[in-house]
Structure formats: structure tokens, C-alpha cells
Image 1: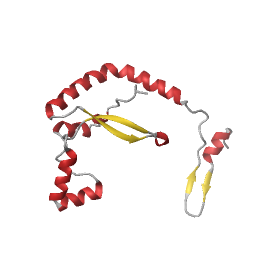
Image 2: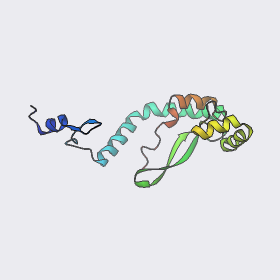
Image 3: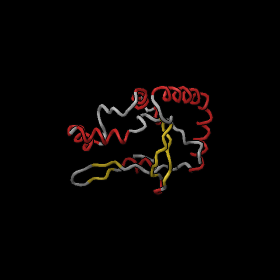
Image 4: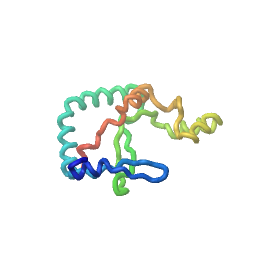
Length: 148
């Protein structure tokens, strides 16, 4: 028999006619948002010597790979439905929306694929370097941590 109240709660089983679910207690502690913020800033500062050289090389390669800006600014909906802007490396050609419109008008097969998933398997709008950045998720490199 468990001696700790939390162990008792953790081992309690809730049953109904179709499912069996184990109930876990909430943790005794939780972090404060300020602590999380300080940890984000500290880790970012520690990783800057690694991130900055990569960011410079990636920026140069993006510029050499295709015309247009290195970064794109994307509008996102955040916590409590607040709007914020996210910066990412550009992985598509600058006039991607126009090209998508033309592709969807020219091919029924591509239109069906896009309407089903809102993606194209072999999307011609993605740059050569953009494919690699997306595959490695480096286009999502966190660039907003120090911004408050």
C-alpha cells in the first residue's frame, strides 16, 4: 500500500464501462513565467556563439540561392489570442502566392492535392536551400527569444 498521498492518487484507477484511465496528480511545484523567461534569455545568450555564425552563413546562402529578402515576417496568433510576428528564414521564392495561383489554375491534380492538404508534395515554389532548411527545421531557428 503506498504511503504517500500522491502515490495513492497516482495509482488510483478510474473505470467506466469502456475505458480504464490512470489519474496522475498535478505536480507539487510549477515554474513561474518570469523564471521561464530568464531561462530562455540565458540559454539564448549561451548559444549565441553557435547560432550567429550559422545565421550569417544561412543568410548568405539564401541570398545567393534566390533573389528576395533573407527573412520573412509571419503574423501568428499567440497566448490569450494576442497577435505577434514570427521571423523565419525565407524558404520559398518571393512571388510564391502568384505561382501557386497559376499552378492551381493549370492542373486539376495539383488543385485536388492542395485542397486536400494545403501542401504540394513537390512544391516548385520552394528554393533548393529552402528544402534543406525545412527538412532540418532550421528555417524555424528561434529568432524571437530576446524580443519582449
